Image (cartoon, rainbow, N blue to C red; front, top):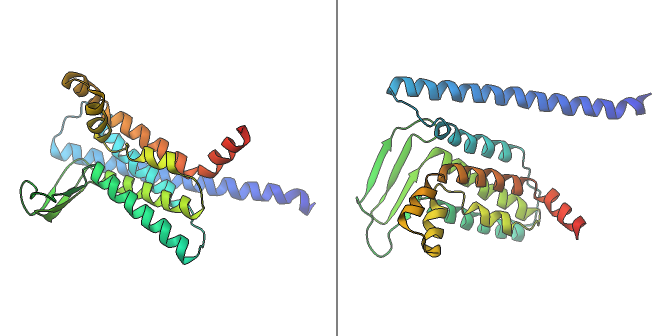
Length: 230
């Protein structure tokens, strides 16, 4: 009797844990909707494209969910050092490609030293800008959470000794608009063609971000599926 009920008990615990997580995330989403609605009302904003209000929260929620559910194994110091170095380098590239980190090596950045806060719709703001004439950070909440998530997942997958070259490279193109600003000049696109495509930058970058997080989060399952097909 106890053996028959064992798997059923484990299933109940699993379902209970998932239901508890779902309830918590419902509360989180409800709070985000309340905060965004209050800000829009107080600021007197007219929203004509609601998806631009939703996308930042998609980045934040997907990123936090993936990080909370990703566990890192214990490894030796050498493997930890390699994974950390690669993840930090990857994060710096993402921050630079996404416009969060600006570097003026040959000449000072426009505007000189900066220290200011710009208010925007929650998720996109508040934006904190701080830096010197040669190094500047523009901390945008959803970008910061998104890029930290990708770097952490790469770090976790490297600790698992999982191949993440493909999904890691895709992460470079999840920044808003940076994929088009890099690729379109290489393709010789016209200004009109470029401006048309960049109108969908938010949609495509959010899709690529979610897809990249999924690849990194389920890297083991994806690798196993590929191996079976071979």
